[in-house]
Image 1 (cartoon, rainbow, N blue to C red):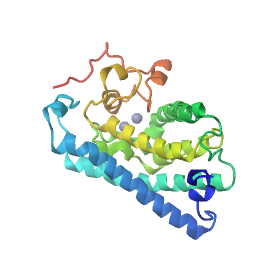
Image 2: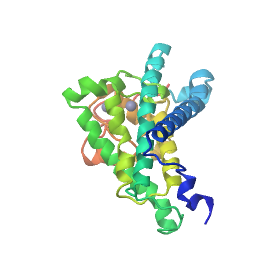
Image 3: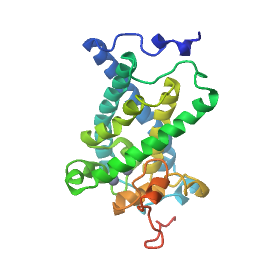
Amino acid sequence: MNHFEKYESYIPFDLLIPGNFLVAFLCLTVIVIFRYFFLTMLFYVPFYKRQSYWSQKRQIYNKLPDHKAQIFEIKWSLVSSGIFGISGVLLGVFWQLGWAEFYLSFDHYGWTYFFLSPFILSILHDLYFYLTHRMLHTSWMYRRFHSVHHASLEPSPWASFSFHPVESIIEALPIPLFSLILPLHPVIIVIYLTMMTVSAIINHLGFEVMPLRLQRWLISGTHHSSHHRNFKSNYGLFYTFWDRLFGTEYESKKSPRPEFH
Ligand SMILES: [Zn+2]
Ligand SMILES: [Zn+2]
């Protein structure tokens, strides 16, 4: 049995002891914050600090968000990181209690399933996100919770976690919930969460980095920045097909896409 096939390699202590729960929460929150700053800086520096001709050509808005707007986004993102930290511990608790459908041997369900599982998870997750995002746009929920995220009319990459705590809880729930029904390898979850952060940064970057041929299928900066400004379309997280299926895809014929300059 190798290192990755041992339960103790992932959770070396009892998470139901309050002190351990607290230590795990603090550690995971620090990891989430570090990952947020590290990955955002990878995009922030080349696009906001050292612009090249290549990046300038891809700018979506006329004017980039100022420092005040960026600080606002970072503050809310730090609060969200704590909530994501709690959901990480919750995932561990589900595992410890034997509720989560985790498996430890990579080929337990076959290699095909191992590689397919993040895509299955992302489609389910996207549907969850789409439906809850529509709910957050009802006037009662929008005014109380979702307006924090939309305060960034033209978001910067720091907006990727910029949510009201109630919205952060809604965002933090799907992975622990899906772990109860979908067999997943912990390594897949770690990679998935990191890719989720990268995707959120790209969608809020303010520059279009997605190749045109992928933009029909995957949510891009142009797609999501349009949602921040017109509120009535483009609710999806990773894929464009839920918006197409529910008839909420941005219709470029009615209003032109943002110009590149
Ligand atoms: Zn957004
Ligand atoms: Zn929204």
